[in-house]
Length: 487
Length: 74
Image (tube, rainbow over all chains, first blue to last red; front, side, top):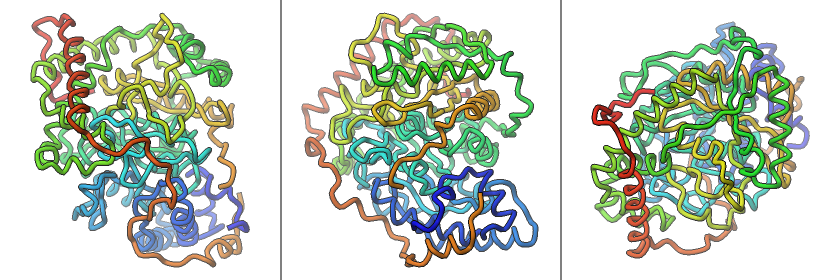
């Protein structure tokens, strides 16, 4: 392992694609190296759910043959990737990270897997996750069939959830990119804690066909990668209309940062308190330097206030109602008791009793929240705040106070010791998910030697704006290129 | 970046093709603070949180013509 330059494992899609086309190495050689690394180092972080070396080898041979004859399929061709273990891959185990489903096998591929196959990307393995994507609300990092997600920057810290393995595998250079999911925080949180660039797409832009359902009206799939540009390339492949997903928006996505408006014409809303009193003290300097770097891109930073709604209770009611219906057979059969986390078990059981009026009220409030954000995005092009307000917590401590819902929704893991009077953008994760808004996570520095990140949130289907700002930010900083020691 | 075939040979030499079985968990993962139970007290606590959420929602005034966001679209 020492003989190979580690750069290859941390190279971007664009860089690897250039090497493949120039025949500096073959698709098969690249994929074999990544497969070996994933199997060797994945268990170190409890990041690996299922290695797929034979599957990957077949795909690599096909991709390599295409490259040899000049049949180029785009930047993802022959690039090794992993998927969160809630996505079905035909005839392979799909456990949803939960013991009751440990032997589950589907006979079809998820739509995102099909689309990535079509682009010539190579699936090297399935990646670990919090059980049932944290649906019932979990209190412990160990809430997973695969054990607690360990952070490549410090294995005594949590990698975040619920897309734990997706974030950790990219951070440790075990795959070039990964697909994860978010219902409320499950992409933003692990990407922030692991120092990885990630994109939560607009609701409906990426098909969820073949993905475990947790909440029909909240679930989204999105990429983890080494740069904003990589996220754009991946999104272009996985986005698009799919009749097999009733929530599909019927839209495609073309990554065109070159046509983005000039930075100086973009207004980005922010709340200064997010980077001061609302941030954990060790992270404040990093956040403030990151805001200064963002300002240097030329965007106009304008102080903004979020519409005030009870985002947490609204999201919790919607999630509880939908997950109770989805997992009713698990709960009623008693198999729910096989889950690892007592708070998850209790949360799912309790969700069966949610009154219909609470769900309906929450769904009506959701309309008002959407309307409020439509007005807000008439004033600004994007919002910026912290991904999480501090670095990853210790893995052996409860993620308290209170269970995290829907994959590490902002339980007070990330709250500063005393919440300030000005709420800033508190609740942005729930608000963004309720309104179906896209978010881009950008690593932006370190606190206590652990990564912290910004998140940019945009109007529905404004991914190109977010990616253009992210690309500009990353052309001026190198936080996204840092890598953990010892990998 | 320049990676040679020799570089790759170095990393691939010790590789053994493994069956596509689930990865073994880490040998000594950190222990959780408490065993799973999800017992009556925890379910009651979860119901109490849900009730508190419902009370918060009940206080929100929503005009009659605002319909639920079924068939949610962003």
